[in-house]
Length: 267
Image (tube, rainbow, N blue to C red; front, side, top):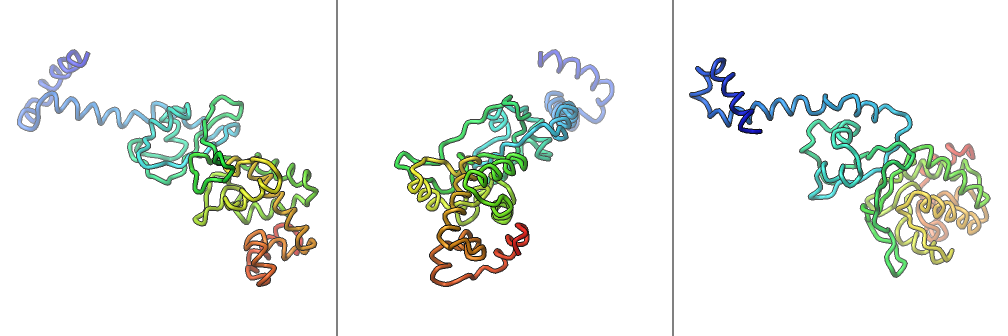
């Protein structure tokens, strides 16, 4: 097939480009060069309608994946069962051959289970929670996080405004982030804190999974409320600084506390 295309190409270029071509490069090299340019220009527009629909469709959700060294966009698309060009379009990637480690990608799906993504567990066999386990980190969307926060607040008998305000301040409602200090996801649980919560509750919840993360975080809010006799300022400060620091050193992070109080309408 390639030789037939090359022959057809030769017949055209001999008539049109003969004076320039022969002194510059071989027929085969010129053919490959022009073919590469053509593919580069038509590749994304060819799937533009499909990609645009994925980007604009309000029914699709993102599961986020953080690129690791050695990853390729094609391999990520294959593992996530997503068309590579749709993946590039949704994430505004102009060159499908150029991605960067630590970049977070949206793997789009329609929310009806049409695409499955496998994650590694965030908990080790001994029950401890892994640090910086990007391969275990689930994604989320705003509606999902808001719904789970309200359910967890009701389950633990808390004000939804309070837990929603803490979640906004901690992570901006994002599950697909790990802080520099190791805080995981929506309510930014530290792995050591998450391990301790599992020990306290006799569960094995995985803070890298959005539902488990939220229920663990809201349980922690409830525990801090009981510890500090529902003093809102100390409770909120302890969630961010730790209960030992607040008990022994008092409230230090007033900016954080005031932001949460304002968002929760508790000020």
